[in-house]
Image 1: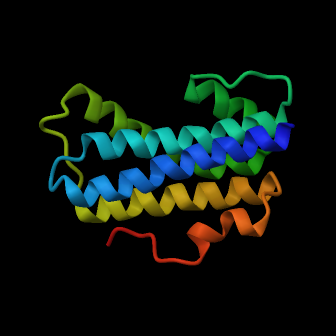
Image 2: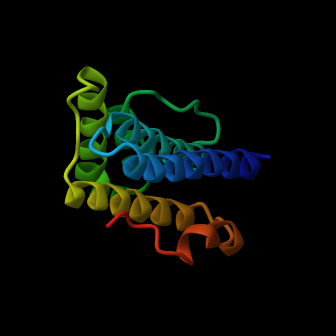
Length: 144
């Protein structure tokens, strides 16, 4: 039952991530929606990991609390803190001024790469089977 919920969170995250990539290209230099979708994808993966580590805990909406909670059981997860906050910061900025928000090509590439690194790390920790991860691991997903 719990594994089904975790897989569902990954599926939702994957959907957000695919949509974000498509929107980065389709929307020219308007990246507010894409950035927000990247953040949503990331949150789904983090929620899945929190659920795996703490079965009876409802996912928190506060990134700081979630990351601290996860680090209690997996101190190595702290390696992603800076990347997670950067992605969250981009999304927050995009929400404040969507009409003026954009990312440079190297930033888009870095955001997508970082989300995939975090996704891969979490997927391995929650023992997600290879077939489920196959979709992203066998194609070139990077924006640039």
